[in-house]
View 1 (tube, one colour):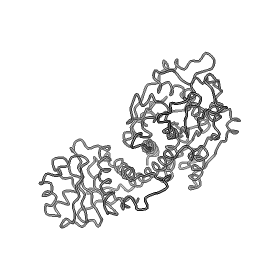
View 2 (cartoon, one colour):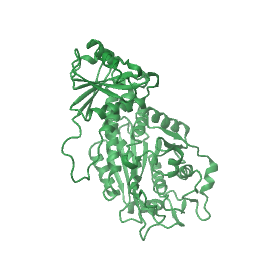
View 3 (cartoon, rainbow, N blue to C red):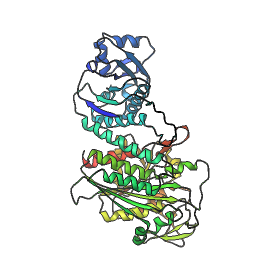
View 4 (tube, rainbow, N blue to C red):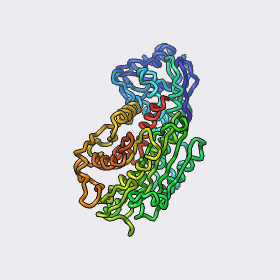
Length: 495
């Protein structure tokens, strides 16, 4: 898919297969629709007077060969009530337009939908419109033996256009990069566990490093981790025949010596629960337990494409959690890289065990800040459902940055408390701490556990258990939180 920006122009004079324009509820015309209506001597107004289409949000109506209009087609899209138009609803409206165009013969389209958003949100809205198009067009059929050789759509080009003056070409470029990063993340997460192993993640990371002279890679094997004292990480991977990997990607986009922003991704490529075996129902979805790692790789892919002027490090803690003969048992005590000992009361609380060593390792880079991303707790789904990611942090300023980026990207998070009173739930009679704190406040106590390994730098934790993938008939990765993370880095870089 090719994405472009068309500067200030008249919607009626564009040579394209389709012009996309908004209609507000009760038939109120957007700026682009008004231009089309004037050029066609009131054809759009006449169409609306029939009453079949009145501008309700997400409704569509295709018009053909309007007099005075250069485009072959005009797609009218309902935008609902004007005072309720938001970036999120605009993305939904854009997807409605794309879903109709997918079944048409149009090869390219020029959209004026973002023309209607408030100027202060325009850059973010343009970025999000591109990711909305990419989301609608995304398919994953790599493992189907009989792929449909006929393209699902003929749509190959999407241009963002405005009737008002302004240059949003950078926003389109950034949106294209974010869409690419989301696609990489989704492809990884949707791949089955027998393909997407820790070794496979390392190979994909190597390909990313090979694609840019600004990216370096270092892969720690289990022997390397043993030498570093990563007993917590190794307690998870030792039950599997698949060797664990700690993958470190360094993107050098900023000045030499400038403190990097570090992203740490949980990469449990399949999670059986280990000896604390999960129920069999929907266990296939545990291939998505590496979505944190997938989002980090996707975000770094976008960084390279955007050429962000900052230093970013991605640390991927990749392992498989299996109930083999060498697997950890409830009651085992292990020593983390930090030297702190952990009593493993539940082997299904394994994500925090690989992350804590990754977070300790991150300290050697003297980071400006660290954000870890993990499908960590079912308790987060209970608390926030499937719309909002959980956020916990030891730094108020960093937490606000993450929350703001989430709102800008319509990839929202909600901050949960993390006080000392919750730390008591992690007490162990036999080690420095237990790896679980019991049923109450499970998302919070999981973050409290991680916080004990992040005391020397600003840190935030994103629990994406409820937002990383969808189940049921729509089963598949969502690509979140790549938009949030990219927006966070764009803001940090001042880009």
